[in-house]
Image (cartoon, rainbow, N blue to C red; front, side, top):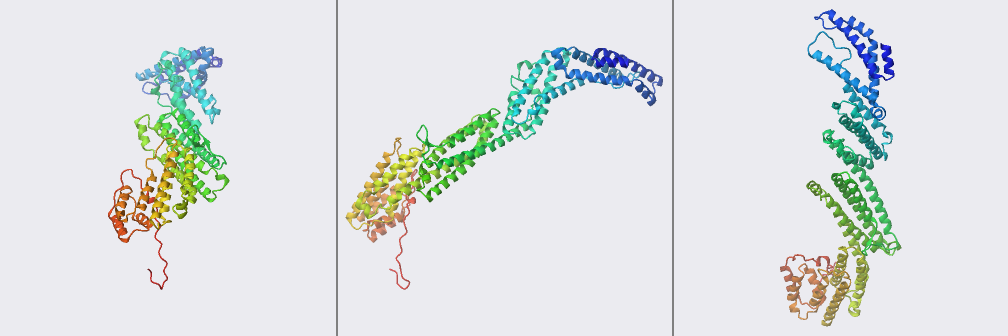
Length: 636
């Protein structure tokens, strides 16, 4: 009987083999029952000698059980393939499993009912139905490993996940349409297969995310887990809703695991962003050395490629991260803003170095377009500021949580942009002052008083610069023009305070005041002629020069106190040193009048009105020169 049953197992005539096996087991159970009964009810178990005797005699039965089980689970493992070819063998395996389950229940019920006349047969209960589902899960895991697993590292990870998707959905179709018909309804085979897939995926992904993944690999995993897996193309398929509620399975990756992956993704992207920004800065510094003016955009403003590269990089990273989640997008933007701040610190340092190199040799051919590239830097910063503000708005535009996160992001990039712009504007003004200096040396001297055309050359430099400032983006375009006029007026009044020209007569005072008034008018006309975009300066500093001219040309020195009082009301930041220098320039102020004027200055301390921009703190008055005294002589 054993030999015949072995041949049936080997030829996979499983039902016939199982019938023979059941017959053999029945003989075995009968012998055990007889031996048990002969020992009496007071001795419920067999003696060791009897037990060994039975086991040896029926050892072939045990081997048959193992052989049948091996073939049985091989058939179950090939169930997907068999269902497409000939499911008969698979159905036979399921029938055998159900027979075994029935026998297990029978013996367990007898034991539970207190029946002492029949011992539990060896190897019972077999729990083959439970093992059926275990084999099913092992089969799913094996199919996962066979789906291009060796190519799942590096760029092939996305393809591996896609292959898994198609494999799982194909198998589910087979299970639902074919295998489900080969098992009893209470097996819920499709649901069991879905659960097995889910558990195997959890284990598979746990191993995958333990690797040192790059940003592209992390993106592939997160996108697949958070979007593809639950989509209608996979587990969210409406046809699967009757078998399983996806939320009952739990996440493929825990929330903590997702957060760790997102942090790894941001750090990986950060390295790439930092490297790209450094390369972009190196290209920018190379552009500054070109012997040609910068490129001009559609608005006529100078620019380089730096803001475009930076903006596209950050926006592209934000767009990609948003495909995963808003949280990851916000983290990516925050990381990008910090990296931009680091870049802008280096950018400002490069501007400072650019200015130092130019001052060493202003005639160097490589700095012919020094001013042009400073203006390009200013325009670049304004463009980057707009892009940065857009990124801030993206972070805070969706939820209150995002707004809270936004409030924790320090305004580092915006502050760094402002510092870079201020430095570039300062260097632009330094360059203007450098070119004005030769002409300003002659202002308010005897030569100036005789020739009267010195300021026209100053206006020529101003006009040329202001026209060039039109290549900068607004609002810096108008700000530079205003600052250039402010600088010219400050330097003009500073030259006056140096007392290069002391009036010797009434005619000198009238002539000096008249020339100063003409200079102020010429400066004002020059500045208004550069306002091509129609903007008007809110505070025109040229109005200061005629006011000072009026004080110089005043004929009655007794009215000086009143005149100075009016000057203080208009310019409350004027100091005693400034007024004293003006009185010296007149050359005719008596001591008592000077004392009264200076006493008025001591008593007057008016507050600066709102919106008033002080000008006199920028105008330094040279200290009075002390007369040279010999050690043995008495100083006058």
